[in-house]
Each structure stands twice: as C-alpha cells, then as structure tokens.
Image (cartoon, rainbow, N blue to C red):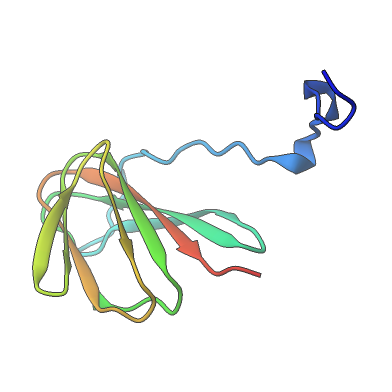
Length: 119
C-alpha cells in the first residue's frame, strides 16, 4: 500500500455513520398518516423513515431540496408529475426540489427518504 492510500486503521467513527431501522414497520396508531422518524441529520443530508399502514397517505407536498426515496418494505405508490411509480424493495425515485408529489400505501410498507440539502 502506498503512503497516499488510506488504511482501515485510518477510519474513525467520525468518518462514517452506520444507520439501522430503515425498514421498521408502523406499529403505532398514526391515523391516516404514516409514522415519521428522523434517522440522521448531517451537513449534507437528512435521512427520514416513513412507515405506512396499508391505505395511509402522505398528501401532495413539496420539498425545498432534492430528495431520494428508497423502497424498504411493502408497496408504496409515489405520484409525481402525473405519473405513479411503485416503490418496493430495490427501487427508488429521485425528485428535484419544489416538485409536488404524494405517497399512498398499497400495503403496509416503509420508505427511506434522503433530503439532499448540501453544505
């Protein structure tokens, strides 16, 4: 290994954040809306878990920053620009800032939201 290459010994807990619980279900009584939990916030992004019970809706809204929404469990319909895509495990959608969108749970399910706010 050359002197310019970092080694595993150079990694410290401040160089990464290990996140868990991104696919946790909605076990509470949250009415018509999903359970929302902030998982992590840094200088560059915020990560939020949205846990839905079948039929719950997050009404049309906009984010002030670009977002990425990743399917974690179940099936969640994501509507943007007149199109609906189904988020499930292994799928994601990226949306520019200030674009109206909504989410509807087809089944119990969870998505991870990454708000990309930069520095």
